[in-house]
Image 1: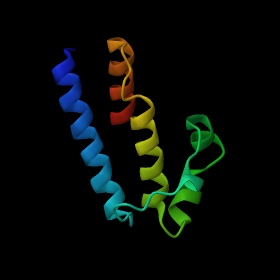
Image 2: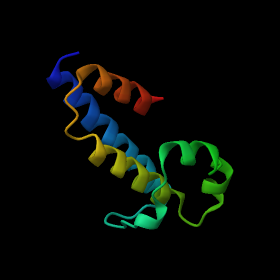
Image 3: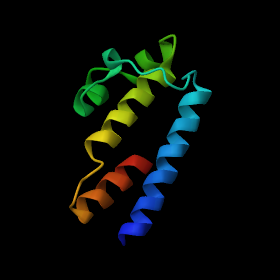
Image 4: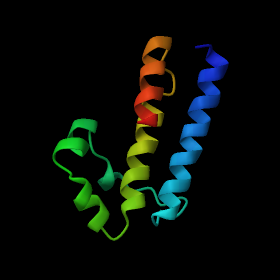
Amino acid sequence: MSSLVQRVNIISLYRAKLRICVSMGYTYGNWNTKFIYKNKQLMQKIKPKYIINQRNPGTIIWNNVRIQYKNNLYEPDLEYIDYLIDNGFS
């Protein structure tokens, strides 16, 4: 996949996830580092039921999406970027 197509997909995915989180109660600029979990920790220890029962599940989800975006912003490996895009859409 070309770099331009990857960039368009990443921006589209980012905006779509932001819209979902806003509909779940996230307010723009509500950044809090206490809601950041490692990917394995988020999938194993933090159950989806726990996130849904929180007062603001959109904040938990968006803070983790945002930190993953920032951590992989300058990734040079195009195949790894494709993997991350596929993972993001799943």
